[in-house]
Image 1 (cartoon, helix red, strand yellow):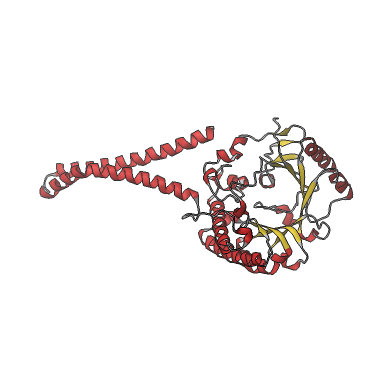
Image 2 (image 1 turned 90 degrees about the vertical axis):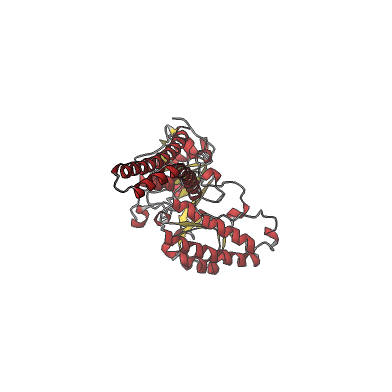
Length: 392
């Protein structure tokens, strides 16, 4: 297999490793665990060392055995853990949900908050209570794939309130980083997850996957192993330049989650509406946060964020297609109007002449068929662009 250079490797220490991003792990909730074999862990770390990759190991609900820790300590690594292990691993990045996080005290350098759409209204209140104890907060919506149109308004309201709380925090010299709000302020280009580009995941079965989500969804479809290396089919589709919607987007903080892309649109380089709208709501609230903080010295030199009149870039593309289609249909009707008017008058003035009625009906049908032809031509153009893109 062709070997691809990555910056780091994610290693799932067990099948029931804590889910830390948009994907879900059914084994974590059930407690059905299967520890990665020590021999596989050793090979994985050696593979990472050979290829100059850092290691990020994801734990389940139990501490690692001593011999696992000893091997890990031979390589630069970081840990992502459930909140319940935060005392055992104070240097690790802890994952918590909105309900358990209130029960934990102490200061955290970096924390991942997994929150469901059902709990999103709790976010501003929790942030106000806890932001002083956190240096960086990463918010991930656990069931973003289930968002409906009504959920976006609730999410927008929660983010607006949280942005207000963040502004208050900044005025009190507590500059907490928030992936969904403050990250966008400092970015001038896309800063995405880049699974399959910058990192790859080693599962307990000794196989590589683009990210943990692909492993839990389809373990039978790996992208390599420790013996042969990593080979991602059509890997060019992971590149930003091969994602036509994302490549022109300014929600620079967006995860651009290729796992969600594949799951919701069946195309690894095409984002779902849920991901686009959520990211643009976050972008807009980043803009509002910046406006509230303009008089704080830290933010005076930050470039302004342009206000957009849409939340899903695909809406703009759709409007343009509809405009082109509408103009073409309007031109066709305009050209046909005189003849149709003439035929209509003949039908009205000579109702007993059936041939006039028939000719008029035929001309109307011809006009409709011509309009349908225009619609088909536009669809063919769009399909052609898609085919060219996929071929590239």
